[in-house]
Image 1 (cartoon, rainbow, N blue to C red):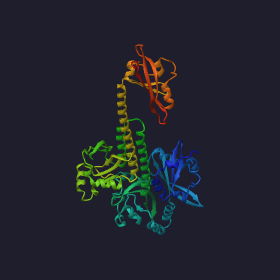
Image 2 (image 1 turned 90 degrees about the vertical axis):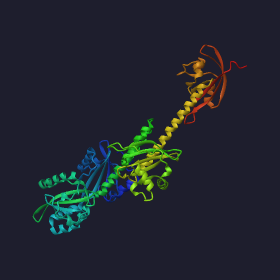
Image 3 (image 1 turned 45 degrees about the vertical axis):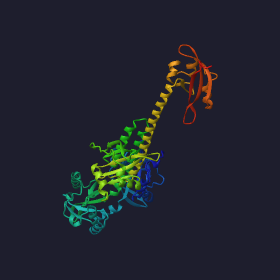
Image 4 (image 1 turned 60 degrees about the horizontal axis):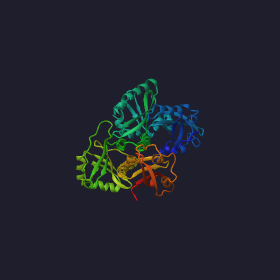
Length: 549
């Protein structure tokens, strides 16, 4: 049996808290090869325990639902169809010799998760039975039911509804009775043909599957519901009965799970861009676009501080997938001209400003924002070793950016990654300039300079060495190059330096290109060490001493 680390599925404490706080049992299945593994369940599942999960964590779905293959099949279909929507089915479990009816809702969470929610709908089924058996009992349950119940004819004209219907639609019963159910403008226009077809099917076939859809209340607020329709006969009249279940909070929780996974994916993608030796500027632009799109910004930029307290653009990108957004000009804007922004940053460690929320006394800041066509601004600092380098900024010129507080994880982590990348880039540029300067200095010296590794291979020589001795040094050992020998010298000063790390000197006679013997005074010293402090290169300096007496 393969064990799955549940920390990789629910890695954030707030996500686990939301999952555990959902009042009904919920289980998370992860696709692994050709099966699914149970990787987590919430507190309600543990307390209620309808599926007896205590000893089945990390068990495969094929074993778990060996007696109920339809449930296993629904989980598979959820992943195959890759649709984050509710699939509702009824299933009966026996607990304490009492038959309980559950509604099972399957949510697909990219890329390989299925969240299974169990809702105890035993009471709903009892209500439906009582409605058929007793008009008096039906009326009582009808009015007292905590969820909306609607009665309407095959043309969708509303005949009756209970008190809970008022809450979900925002209309009073008086306003609803005798109105056409489809003319309330409660549903988006795209749903109307689907709802009409559903009523026709119910009238002709007697049953339809539950449907998940969104509904707008009278005040315009959005609600997600599951609509369950059935045919009923009351006083000899055939009509439709609709039961609506509000799943708005469940939908929000599922969207939060999905959003959390998207944040992890973006952070992983940004981090991986800077691991390999790539174009850092291009990686920064792509990372800014990813961050901006996740939080709904239209534009993103990286600003650097200058010595005169102005800001300089390092990069500016459009985050819109639909069209290009015009660049804005922030060059030569002085940071000190925005005291309100500075106060916000000192207080919170970041800046989030919405133009409509600015205090009246901040008219100067408001005018500057209007001039730049910025309606909202979100800014995070970029730091290198606690030194403030600049800012990463996002703005939305069409509407206020709707970003979650949890997106701070993405912004803070990503800004740290970009800051580290800039430090590495500037460090490499500085090192490259330093190496070029050192190489130029060594090449200008009149002494012969030779770099040797621990296997006595010649790594580099300066111009003077090539001119006096031999330009064909690549791939040769130092004793082959200098002494035309097949083995190291007995008094090799380079060998001594490799052994003790000290400076060593000795006199050598070396033949030049013309075959003339030249006496040299050889000095060796450590040139570089590896990360384990082992000597990896030795520098050999040869000074001509023929003319010395």
